[in-house]
Length: 148
Image (tube, rainbow, N blue to C red; front, side):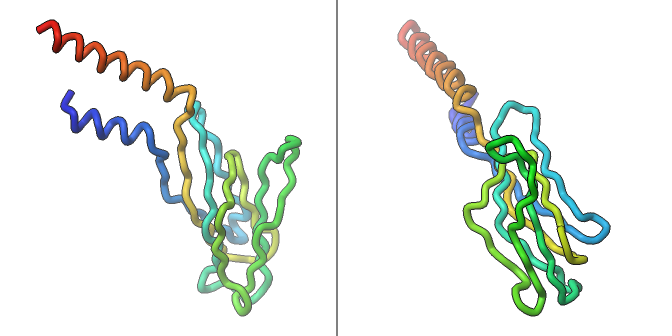
């Protein structure tokens, strides 16, 4: 394996992978579910923006999030109340949610657009043995070089 491909493999494994995420809530689709993946990795949904569509009526649009809390209960919590003539968009910072999470349009007809990032983090327990394997491989490469 060349050193450049080994380096790119290490970078992709050590850094979090962030994918653009978004959904639309309307009267026809009042909820959006972000499911948890069964890949033994840690996943986060970083919600960044909630905005009304151009054709949204001038009425109150309430968006809530339904996620398991520390007590294991599921209760929708309102996170945005938008009205096109007053507040058509909000930008959020620091709202990190662990899937499974459900976004619900509690009132209003929409369309309401939610956007953010879906981040996958490597588990420390998985990465530590991998690093040990690499250091053993590198030690083996040095031993081979010294023996030749």
